[in-house]
Image (cartoon, rainbow, N blue to C red; front, side):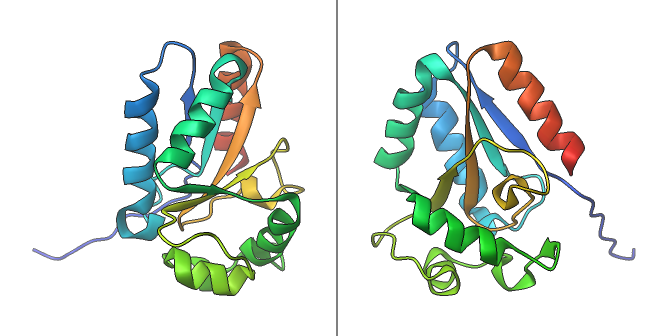
Length: 158
């Protein structure tokens, strides 16, 4: 046999609504996003969270080693995720310490994933792009239906 490689665009979102087992959902996303430093295109790129569980989900991510970017840090990360309209190859599959240097940020030691809370989807929001590293976009949706619509837009955007 001959080895073959299949790749394609992915911009996989996860939706967490009020029926979810929040601990299991967050754990699964972190395991997926940290395996091989998030280089697998099937790993989550964004998390869309229903408003009425948003704070619980955010707290669970933080408990499990996620670092939420400040507004200033988000700007630094946005500038390094997409360069000249394309994914910055220098961030693909990089560890948190390496990403921290590239982005010019200082998350605490032991950080497993970097998260930016955002609203936009599309070329105007670099964090809504496929990132292929342990960085996630984090969205708030008022209802489950809106969350599904946002997830659909994220997939179609890719």
